[in-house]
Length: 118
Image (cartoon, rainbow, N blue to C red):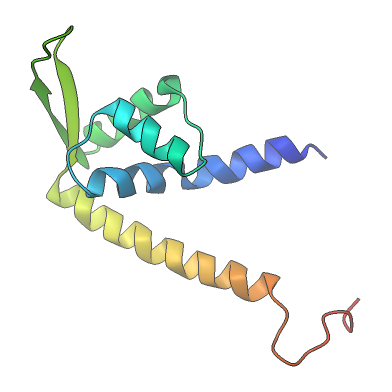
């Protein structure tokens, strides 16, 4: 079994949630998202990010505005819509439930010998 493939699939599963978490904090330029992800030790390529941002915008979860740049073409800054904020709240609840369940399954119960069930 290829551990790298499994790791990649796990990261893809939380990618949308992580990106929405960044945007929820305030208006953001895509390269800022890449930087935030890298600082959290999650790598994302712009070739992955832009289609995801477009899909989220088309679903009504994000909006954007163009800002003129002094050094190049105008920049597109993304922010959350009200629909996006509601979606994020549902996603965050789901994430917390999932994280709690995984934690419960991967930690030995208190005062139990984890080797007893082997």
